[in-house]
Length: 321
Image (cartoon, rainbow, N blue to C red; front, side):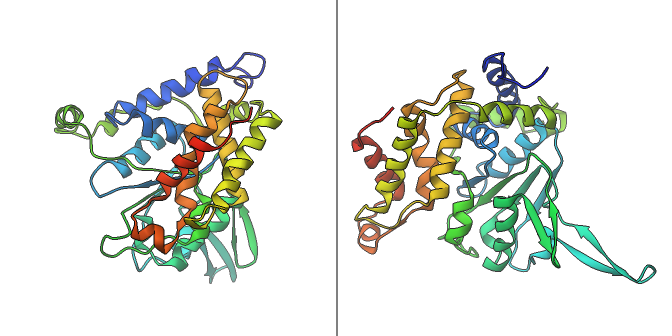
C-alpha cells in the first residue's frame, strides 16, 4: 500500500484492503457478514465496539479474529467481580534497588483490547476504561501515558437479566460507537461450523490480512470523506429527535452525533464513495444510537425497545442531503 490510501487514488484501495480483512474474519465467523462489516466500520471510524448477546454465539471469537486479521498488538481481559482498575490500566511499583517507582503498563496498552464479559466487573472497574476510550491515554499517579494508535476496545457482554451482571453506566455505553448482536447462526452456518471448528481452532492457521500501518492509512483516508452541510444537519436532526421523544427519558449525546458521522464516513469509504449519503446515516442509526438511549417506565411496560423507537424516528424524519 503506497502513500495514503484513498488520497489521489480514490477509495477503491480502502474497500479492497478492508475487503481482504473482512474475508479473513468471515473465514472464521461464518454466516455473520453484517456483524463483521459493522465491526470494520467501527474500526475505520476510530471507535469502539460493544457486542451483546447470550453466551456461546461467537462474541469473543469475532473480537479475537479481527485482532488477528490486522496483525496488531492484542490484549484480552476477562472481566470478573474481583477485577481492579489497576488490572486494566497498569500500576506503579516501588523498586527497592533503585528506590523509585516504576510504571508497569496494563493490558490497555495495545492496539486492540478485548474486554470479555465487561458487565461482570463492578462499575468502578468499568470506569477505568473511560479515559482511555475517549482520550486514548491513561493517567496513573498523576502521570499521563499515551496509548498506541490505532486503539480499539471490543467488549462483549451478556444480557443484563443474566446472573452476575452489572448494567453498564450511561457514560460507559456512550463511549462505544456501536452495539451489535451476533444472534444464533443459521442451521447451514452451524453445520459448517462443526466441520471448520470441530478438529482445531481456525484461528491457529489464520494469516493477517493487513498491518497496523495499513489500518492507520485506512483511517486517514476515511477522515477525508466529504460530509455536506445538509447531511451534517440530518445527523443533528436525527440525534435531536431522540432527546424530544416522549418514550425516551435519556436521548443521545453530542458524542453520538460525532460518532454517527464518523461511522457514516467509514461506510461510504467501504462502498468506494468520497461522500456521505443520508442512506449511510439511516443504515447506522440503530447500532450507533440505540444503546445510548433509556426508555421511560411506560415504554418498558409496553416492551418498547430503543431499537424500535430509533427505526420509527428514522422512518418519519424528513431526509436532508
